[in-house]
Image 1 (cartoon, rainbow, N blue to C red):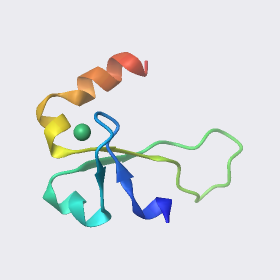
Image 2 (spheres, rainbow, N blue to C red):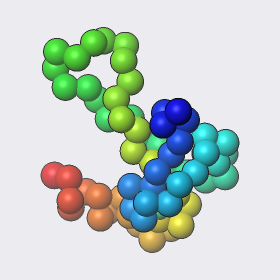
Image 3 (tube, protein in one colour):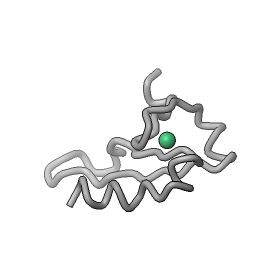
Length: 64
Ligand SMILES: [Zn+2]
């Protein structure tokens, strides 16, 4: 199941939900207007290595 797998938005590294406990950061993006309420959107995940590099700043530039 793809929903069970995490992919780092910074480097593409893959992880399992259990890895969240090891320092992964997850963020759920809001659904566009009109989408089913209660449904979860795509999850943006960042691995600990990217968090240390400040990947969140990079994402901010790429996704205004
Ligand atoms: Zn990464």
